[in-house]
Image (tube, helix red, strand yellow):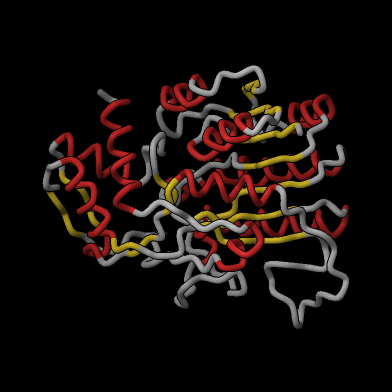
Length: 333
């Protein structure tokens, strides 16, 4: 099949592209290569997936005309939409970047799918949509009406926009609420990357909420496997579904939402210790309070996803951190 992967120079996007071409699919990847973090890393990810079945297009999903042209020319079978302005804290200072990429950009992708008979749109939501929810593990049946960052609000909006298009135009859409993804080629604004760099440089690492934080760290290979498998599970109409009795993660329309994570949260201090052990260096630590826009715990209930794709994450934190640190030391010499 022919796939479009948006955000193909990103951490998850580049890994998804690599898996798809290894499976024999034709893939076009798009990315605007913005400078939210180092462009050299994005270009390095792209350079390692040069392949006859892959073509990269430098394109911003907020550019309606360019997106429309790409869709009409290429006639994709499926779209895996991972492009977005990422980062919770960055959204506190640069809200308009999120409106352009995460709202307008998502609308442009939906319009492309609508007018070109795309058979399935899989898109990235986020665990951040759970916001003030204190019930764990987070389940897709829970309320997600109280986000604590604009980033989270845009991701909740993506789910709502997708449902409206599934309902109005019969477009099969699947949203994936990603839980803390890490591994080789990871993002420099994420904790594993920040901690590893600072420990190696002899700098002090800031530890929020005095270390009493829990994250459902999920290794990149497990995430990619889930994304690829769910692309084959195309939602269908369910006429008997009702708002009163049904889950908000499904619909009478061809619409689904799933959590995608490891399903076993790790204490932040244990994760830092795993990095320290792998580096052979004890971190210099600065314990501080909870930061604005942060949440105490993420913990995914992923049973419904496991049941439909027949796969559970295989990589534990010890193995995952070992692979990440080995990549980091090799890439940055």
